[in-house]
Image 1 (cartoon, rainbow, N blue to C red):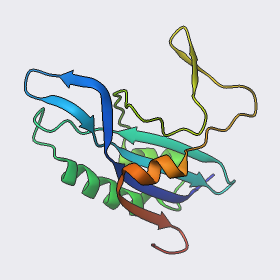
Image 2 (cartoon, rainbow, N blue to C red; image 1 turned 30 degrees about the vertical axis):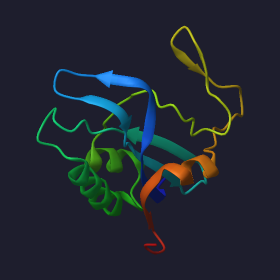
Image 3 (tube, one colour; image 1 turned 90 degrees about the vertical axis):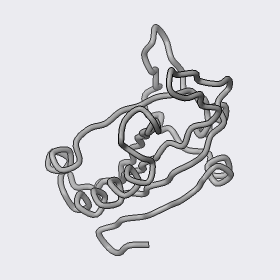
Image 4 (tube, one colour; image 1 turned 120 degrees about the horizontal axis):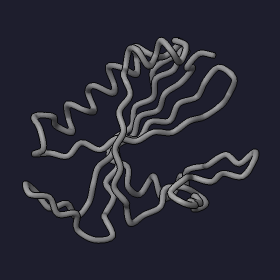
Length: 141
């Protein structure tokens, strides 16, 4: 299976309550959201948040990293893509839900019914979107 298309988005989401750290208080966060479609038509989502001030990493640098690596992993199988881009993870709880239907959790685990495919609410996403890039094996949009 090959990665056929990646869509990158960055959004600004207000938090339910301020997230207080020793070096900064966040009232919103700006994750980078990645939508991936493989050659079999399956879709996956991931997000990452860069916490300005916690390191030398910047949101702009993270966006540039994602754009650069997106072009490098299109048309690669998943194993090769992971070795190119690495695996990163981050989480904060936003006030706005991006999923069309709420996700269910039980005992700290995500619970998905058989055959359920999470979908993003495009209208909510559009109201928070700051930037977008699309990478495809066919062309760049």
